[in-house]
Amino acid sequence: MIHAWSVEQVRAAEAAAMEQVGDEELMDRASRALADVVAARLEEERDERSDGQPGEASRAPRVVALVGRGNNGGDALWALAHLAELWDGDLQLTVVQVADVAHPAGLEAARQAGATVLVASSHGEEGEESDQGGDSAAAPAEQALADADLVLDGIAGLGSRPGLDPATVDLVDAIGPQAYVVAVDLPSGADPSGETIPDSQVYADETVTFIAPKPVHVLAGAASCGLLTVVDIGVELDPDEQPVAQSLEFDDVPHLWPMPGPEDDKYTRGVLGVVAGGQTYTGAAVLSTLSAVESGVGMVRYVGPDHAADQVRGFVPEAVYGTGRVQAHVVGPGLDVDDDSEPGRAQVQAARDALDSAEPCVVDAGALSLLDGPRSQAGARTLLTPHAGELATLLARLDGEVTIEEVKARPVQSARRAAELLHATVLLKGATTYVVPPPRSGLPVRAQSDAPAWLGTAGSGDVLAGLCGALLAAGLDPLDAGSLAALVHGVAGHDANPHGPVRATRVAQQIPRTVAHLLTRRP
Ligand SMILES: NC(=O)C1=CN([C@@H]2O[C@H](COP(=O)(O)OP(=O)(O)OC[C@H]3O[C@@H](n4cnc5c(N)ncnc54)[C@H](OP(=O)(O)O)[C@@H]3O)[C@@H](O)[C@H]2O)[C@@H](O)CC1
Ligand SMILES: Nc1ncnc2c1ncn2[C@@H]1O[C@H](COP(=O)(O)OP(=O)(O)O)[C@@H](O)[C@H]1O
Ligand SMILES: [K+]
Image 1 (cartoon, rainbow, N blue to C red):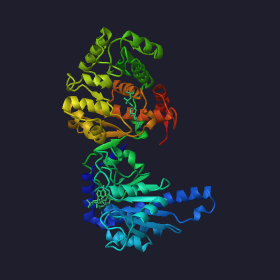
Image 2: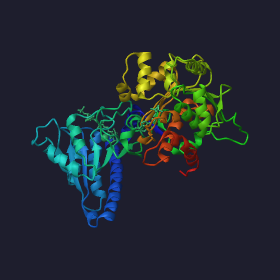
Image 3: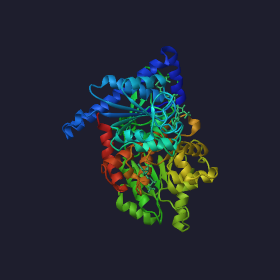
């Protein structure tokens, strides 16, 4: 499990360490660790080039550091100086200063190491020399970025405001497609708290962070970090503090996935009620039921009108038909709450009955509109599974005007607000899927970014709902069930057809093999 600590927790740990060893020592450790990573990546790149084109390997690698005014820029500057010591050959080093000033000692060290310093600050007039003696030139800076083999992003770190100014966006856009972008601590312009998604920011191939992951690395921002490398700089976090965000890793699956034992039978393993589909949407009924069965639930009791039940019978013969004793429900995939026909009204009533029960519920799609407040049985475990549009509609109804754009820009806050209003865990679907428990639980937010974009296909959410339901029926709490389901769903989406399109049915059918692989793989 990746545990992420808040900016405040990390700053407090840093402050305590600084009192003991001083800030220069901490920056020295951070920048040396960063230089080690950069050297390793350049070496890998050199080996690849020498395989491809003879003679190319000897060309001096071009490394450009984008440097802001704070300590993040200081790390990048010192890393260039250390890199020059480490590297056994020629290097072409360039500093592109995006602010009018940069960490003075770091700038001097980079210069001593042979770096060319270009000032592309919007504060200075073009053609002017900076106070610190660099050449002011946007065009040479953009050229250096276009030609770079590796770019170090040291514009801003923990002190980053979400978003980049237009002049900085132009520089970031100038980075050539061949460049390997290493973000120092976090991609600049990302929100360190992981709460919001800004209009503009750096997208990195790798992020080298210090001490511990921060929320940006697992929440809104995870998709911009690339490979996450955490380096130890000898700063300890307060052992009494708890992480504020988490992300499951493959190694967590064997600890969380419900394993049947010799004493188990279909009832003890968990029976899931599925209230899904109607006259209009029968596919959602089939997919959510299929997915629950493929996920290894003890049994599924499907509830729906005859037409949908016939489809379920045809495609998923393992399911039984009608209400009965269950350990959890999936309510809502393909549910049409406006269907005024007799079977339609009966289906909505079945959904309301499940929501009024004390059993854990996955509340998906159509059933989200049946919730006006917390479920009537206090404490009943509830996992809502909206996508951004559904969450916007839900919040607009319960809490005043909210748009889908606002939900997409502030995913964690939006999910947290719904979790608070409905006393439920909210799983917000997307490229990063957030699982946000009710604030009063004190539990951390989880987020999973395991899914390929190919998974954004009709019916994929119905498969996720069935998977969540199977895990709730087996006794997992909504936070574990939602995050584990999101991980397995994403990996199954990849495994079903690596690097290519997938249909939802194949994702569901892939679940057993993906789970077996995750349960037996060596770390
Ligand atoms: N403390 C320690 O012991 C250690 C700290 N370490 C390192 O220090 C980093 C934190 O450094 P920090 O506190 O100086 O803040 P930092 O992130 O450099 O930004 C500050 C300035 O940037 C600017 N700025 C902000 N947002 C911006 C944006 N979107 N786009 C452009 N500019 C933006 C803003 O200036 P403004 O524009 O507001 O004048 C602000 O003043 C941390 O991430 C780690 O790398 C390591 O060495 C380990 C030891
Ligand atoms: N760009 C993306 N990258 C990865 N996963 C995605 C992306 N877009 C959507 N998904 C996933 O696909 C599923 C879509 O669910 P949903 O929108 O409810 O579809 P449907 O209602 O058709 O079943 C969710 O699990 C979501 O996380
Ligand atoms: K950065």
